[in-house]
Length: 269
Image 1: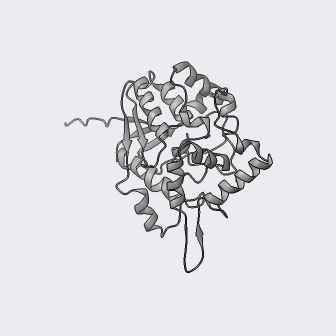
Image 2 (image 1 turned 90 degrees about the horizontal axis):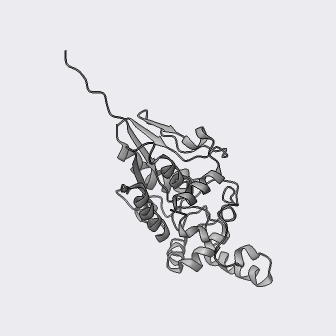
Image 3 (image 1 turned 30 degrees about the vertical axis):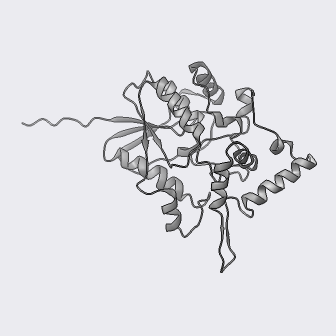
């Protein structure tokens, strides 16, 4: 009788360059030594994200595999007739993040480790593929935001540089950015801000505007925030980079967004 060798179960953790997935990788490094670490690279990430991934690789002692889509953002933008991604049409996440991840996993049996914390009431990406099982170690072990910050500090890895002016990881033009984060992008990376602006268009025939923020262009946003700052109406957006602030202060508001909607977990965690 011929014996059948059982399939090996793969263990995969997707890093976004954010605090929660990074802390989870640190938390599980010695507990799951066979872990595969991946990062879905859209090609539109911040340089601070790439720098942080390099630090994480040194700590984890193994490479973080960069997964990329066969087609880039500009290709898909043309497919969607210039419609920029939004909270209601997140094609960027689906095509540039989730699709490469599922292609990497293939038909193998996989345990996918997700960094949702015990103090979060939210659901993440759960693959419908029957061969992928998602698990939530932080939720199961009662790990909260304070624990995540402690894990990052005690590891010596710290946090990505973008947390000085931004509350989450993701593409530099992520539509989930708050007003002050767009201001921060213009200040910290003016070349990326200009690139984001270049994607905004007005249809010559219909007059419809394709903008990252509903109802205003990035130029209009910056001008409004400048005027508010001059009048002292919004010190939060007028202030400079967040330097030398306690971690708790840096992340005090990262669970809320302007419109009450939450960013995509595969991008933000």
